Image 1: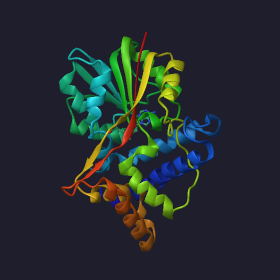
Image 2 (image 1 turned 135 degrees about the horizontal axis):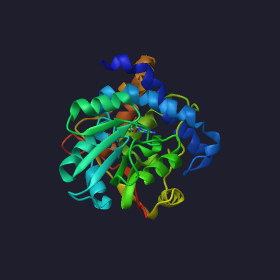
Image 3 (image 1 turned 180 degrees about the horizontal axis):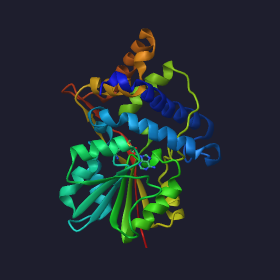
Image 4 (image 1 turned 90 degrees about the horizontal axis):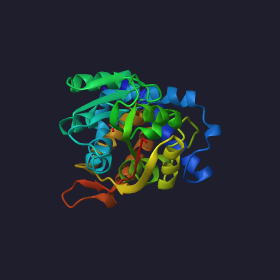
Length: 302
Ligand SMILES: C[S@@+](CC[C@H](N)C(=O)[O-])C[C@H]1O[C@@H](n2cnc3c(N)ncnc32)[C@H](O)[C@@H]1O
């Protein structure tokens, strides 16, 4: 599918997320959003529509920041997985992390509530079982998995507590949940673009989930404990993103935000601002090293 065909969805989605991030940080400070101000139905609809649209170009333009940049080492470090483990990748997108984990474990499955993501995953990795399902309501029996992993998914959840309680149900006793959660204000790569974007285009309110701006490890620990997990831990980790050229980020950014529709001079300023913001991350060989930071959270089921 051509990028141009996807523009309307991306315009609404990514600009919305960026603007709401900015306005929420300005109004409340970092941490959990005031859930009273969030309509979970709107968030869920918004997220669902966005990811349905993003599916065809996710691997090429977005995964270099999410599922192809050091996540495997972090998951391996805290998940306790072995070649006997049965794993679930929640919000699996086109299945890239599930495919990376498959050779290391007994079996891996993936779920995503965007059917287009599941179609992409199934066509790329036909040997892996992918289900079209919401994290809040999965098709699995109690105590099915040794480990359930959410890579860059939790901050998109409309009702994280409901999802985490459901995931606790399907994890075996002594099994684990592992979450990799990008810290919005410390994403050097995507943030270089966002900073330039927000200098040109006004903030607007839009639906985003209550975890979008979590930055403090103790917030995650409290959340997981309140959902019935034990031995909850969370740490800030650097998860570097490598890019051979700034053009990859620019292509991703234009593709996912529909900036083509903005006046040429606005586009040019955002492009120049992005390039300027990335310059501090340039490698001697002409590529880029972005020291993005994530929250790495994990906990057990009793
Ligand atoms: C940023 S993508 C991450 C995809 C993949 N985990 C990766 O790292 O490449 C977020 C994914 O979470 C999925 N998602 C969001 N909310 C969900 C929910 N309630 N249930 C299942 N999947 C969800 C989206 O459809 C999307 O594919």
